[in-house]
Length: 320
Image (tube, rainbow, N blue to C red; front, side, top):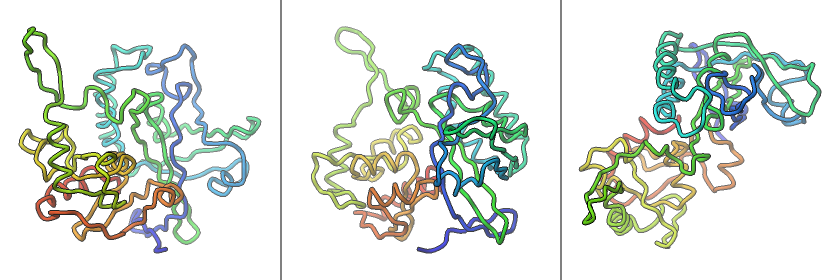
C-alpha cells in the first residue's frame, strides 16, 4: 500500500496510525454547554488500557505533541452551528449558545494556522480507562467548542524521521438526534393545504429519486443495481444548492445506504478521473469491511454532466 504523506511546516510526515471517534462526553465539555448536573472535569477519556492503545499513544505516562488545523476547527464549528443556534438538547445554559458560538468562532479565527499543544496521560488514575490532560490552548478549544454527544475527536499519528506528532480533528455527528443532519439544516418550503394548515415538506424527493435512479441505475462503488436498496444521494448537498440545483437529475447519484452515509459525511468522494477518494479520517479496518480502497475506478453515468457537482463535493465536503 502506498504511503500517505502530510506536509506539516515544510516537512513530509508519513501517516502511521489513526484513532477515530473519541466522543466528547458531557463530563468533559465546559460547564456552560453541559446537559447533566455535574461540574465535569478537564481530562479526556481516550480509550481503555491495552496493547492497541499503547502502540498508538505510547507507554504509561506518555506525553504527545498534537496540533489542530485552524481551518478544520472553523469547518467543525460551521457544521455544529445549527445546534448552537437552534439547540435540540437540553443544555444547562441553552439561551446563551448563540452568543457563545459567535465569541468562540472569533477566538478560533485569531489562532495560528496550526494550533500546537501537548497532552499528558493522567497515570495516577487506575486503569482500565485512560485519560489525558493539558493546560494549553488547543486542548482548551476541545472543551470549549465541542457539544456533548454530538462531537467527536480523531487523531492521525504522523512520523517524520524520529519525530512523531498527532493531527487532532473535531467532527460533528448528529445521529443521536435521529438523523445524519440537524433538524434545522435543510431548506424547507411551506405549502398551504386545503384546511389552511401550514406544513413543511421536502418537495420533489420521490420524483428526484426516480429520475436519479433512471439516470444512474446502479451504485458506482458497489455495483448494486437493485432499486429497492438504492438511494438518490445529492452530490452537492441539498442545503447548499439553489432551487434549480436541488432537483437537478445530475446533482444526484445512486448509492447504497452505507455509501450514501459515507458520501454525505465527506469520508468518500470522486475525482476528475472517476476514481474513488478515501478520506484519511476513515480507518483501514472500516474501509476494508465495507469494501473500499483508495483510487479504485468507478463508473458514473453521464459523468461530464455531473462533474461540476462532483467537483464541488470533492472541494467542499470531502474530508481530505
